[in-house]
Image (cartoon, rainbow, N blue to C red; front, side, top):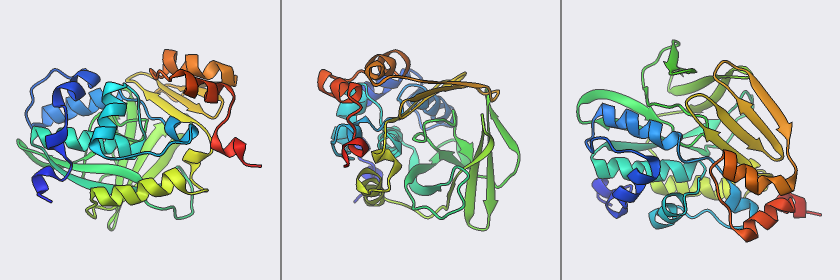
Length: 281
């Protein structure tokens, strides 16, 4: 495949995507555009796994991603977000390299590579940038790929990027304190590698995304998380509140807080708490 169309940017409805995320800035492969576009994407498109709760697969072809995330104004998880963002960047003239990471969240065991990230360079800057648009909790802006233990302030949110040998580690300050979020290397990944990872997280019995709804809506000043029937509101200063919601409340909560409108059949599944794990005898 031509490297210029690796991410199928030529198939993207660029006007539709930019309207979806509310971006009206210059369409140039500059650092300023990259920063503004990532902020627009992560604060507009929610993280969600509702297709799996309804028993449907997660296709990663660009047309399916556009139909779901742009035209239907739904969200997606990391592979969906990263591929849509990569297509937009490629279309705008950025140099985009795929990466995959292992989500840790403080765990000590070795987990599979199931998190999609992007390594991006711009036309007006010789630095390399990490774009992580599919984790559900930022970062708001790209992070320079430089080994450092310094705190990275992005408006009110805080991150750290560290390097040990070939391994890079991203940390985030949240209600639990500093959390080791995921590790990754700079080994180049291709769309086919994302399809393999996507198959695992969308079908393997041990995948957390098959167990319960997991939805996130990230803003510059607040982070909403729905984990099964627990709705947590987290703020950059580490404060948080949590409450349990009833299954029948989920469709309205998704619409009002997470900007996700579900159709009547999916609303019925959520209201009945009828997701895959709960169907298992």
